[in-house]
Image 1 (cartoon, rainbow, N blue to C red):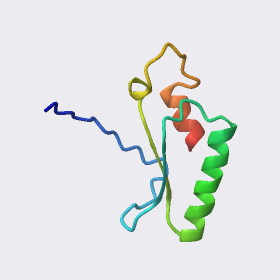
Image 2: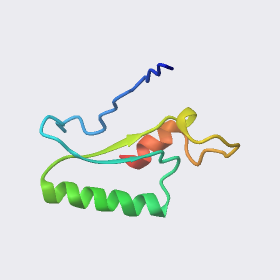
Image 3: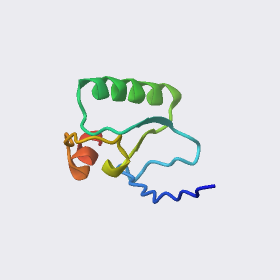
Image 4: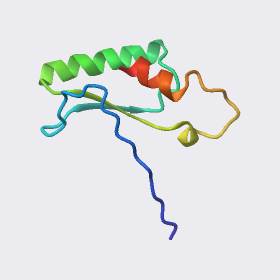
Length: 84
């Protein structure tokens, strides 16, 4: 059996947010924040407001994206800024 270990970095863009009572979360690579991503994030924030919980995004580092020779649409720093 192959063991896998993941290095996970949690970045809290809203320092006042607490995930203690749960959150509404979107999961994806978010290699750039295009119109489809923006629509999904708008739905995420609307649902989070409805539930009165923080919105959260779980994203993957570029090395975790599917294999291929495709260029990234945004750097990790740019992706954080766009998602914020």
